[in-house]
Length: 90
Image 1 (spheres, rainbow, N blue to C red):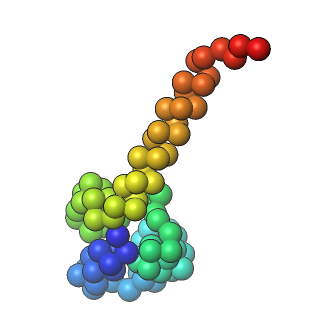
Image 2: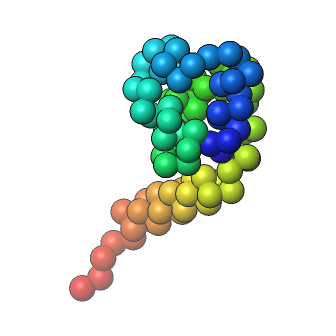
């Protein structure tokens, strides 16, 4: 995803500083996202999709690692929800 975010920012002729100010995040956050050292949260993905005039789906599909992380997080939520509904037998 980092390469895609970097390319999209350059297509908009924006510096990291300009994007960071527009998104209300640090320039270092933009650097981390573009260098695959971190991922934007869902709110920031929404902002990025608006700024870059693309969909969140397009941003996420470009990164299999992020897709797997999202799937794992969803599975963990389902497991936690199930555990809260199943009484413990001692």
